[in-house]
Structures are given as structure tokens and as C-alpha cells.
Image 1: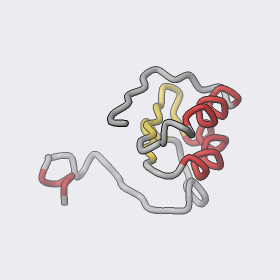
Image 2: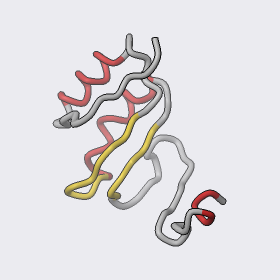
Image 3: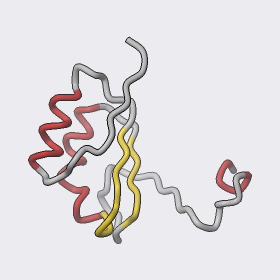
Image 4: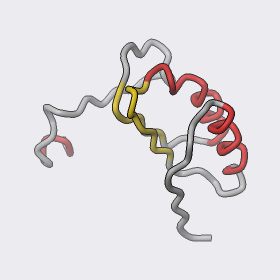
Length: 88
């Protein structure tokens, strides 16, 4: 409903699933707002599902868990371009 209200309903596909299991294809953008421990399982799958210039947005990561996420991203060849922190 929000996509349609904002005029992008035909340009964006939203999918629900178990991480990227059963997801075919490559995408310009992958967004995840889940626990850090789950992200650690997701990160190794990302590269095969991203277009060449694709990007990933993670949100909701507890700052105490951030070092583990940063390490996993680096180990899988990802570069962090922007980090934002609010609260605490």
C-alpha cells in the first residue's frame, strides 16, 4: 500500500522469505532490519544476489554487535560506505 501511495508500486517488488533461500536473481538493493546474529548468516549470501553496483542497507544493529557485522562484511569483500547511529 505504501509503495502505491508513493507512486512506485510498479517499480519495486517486496518479498518475504527465509533470508535469501529460494530467492533467484540479482538485485540493485537488499534491505535487512534483523538481529545481528541472523545478519551473520545472511552476509555470505549477499554477493551472489547483488547486481554489480548493488547495495545493502542494514538497520537496527545494536552498537555492541556492530564489530561482528563489520568483520563479517570485510571477510566477504564488502566495504561500509556509511554508518549512522542514533540514541544511546
